[in-house]
Image (cartoon, rainbow over all chains, first blue to last red; front, side):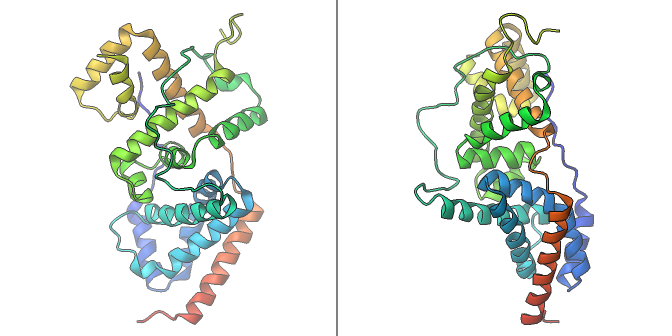
Amino acid sequence: MSTIQPNVEQPVSDEMALVRRAKRGDDQAFEELVRRYDRNVFRIAQHITQNREDAEDVVQEAFLKAYGNLAKFQEQSKFYTWLVRIAVNEALMKLRRRKPERTVSLDEDVKTEDDSLPREVADWSPNPEQMFNQAELRDILTRTIQGLPAGFRTVFVLRDVEGLSTEETAQALDLSVPAVKSRLLRARLQLRERLNRFFQKRASGDGDQ
Amino acid sequence: MKCSEFLNELTNYLDGALDARTKSELDDHLAWCHNCYVVCDTTRKTIEIYRNSEFYELPDDLRERLRSAIMTKCAEHKRSFPPRS
């Protein structure tokens, strides 16, 4: 069975050259970094906060913080990983403010009983995403991922949607690599389980080609 | 290999992060265990569907507005805290 390949190619040295220019006070270089990563930061922020206005605020605040702290960036990781770390923290703060009744942290929801174990094992249609129109599919995917606890959702978004490596995800979230792997496994299995009811082969043979 | 052992390694398996010997043990398990095959296949599809989906895209006009606001505030920051040379 084929493996999943990361989908993001980041020209690292080019990125670091921009960072160094920005550190020397070249705002055009910093603006180029904004152009390069604003879409990613917006997506990550909206996945975490589940609110568009909050996501817009997070984009602004994350880049401003990065700008103000650029001199402290030690260049031991990619700039993007450092930026994502800032953005995730900003987004989690927004989420906590909006949902103060729930403690939201990346360490939450590590239950002992495992709700990720497959309960239903049914094969899917060969191209399950083609069973729905684009708007329906987007709605299914959005509602399904929103149902995950914030800690799992964040790991899944960074690793599988944004294509960060396991190590980069660990750095961005200040988690250990085993903790990232454990949350990623459970996030993937829970999403799979929840998508079952939309994508599984119908008994009548719908979806068979 | 038990199914639970297979599941524990599923993420490493899908990410291609296993040594050859462990991978071959997992391949053997998949060859006869239909349930694990289905779980593995549908988990891989789950990841691919999310990865290929385009949602929460940033519209061009909003993007422009955000970038302009960011750069204005950066300029204000620079005036308040000029870089030491």
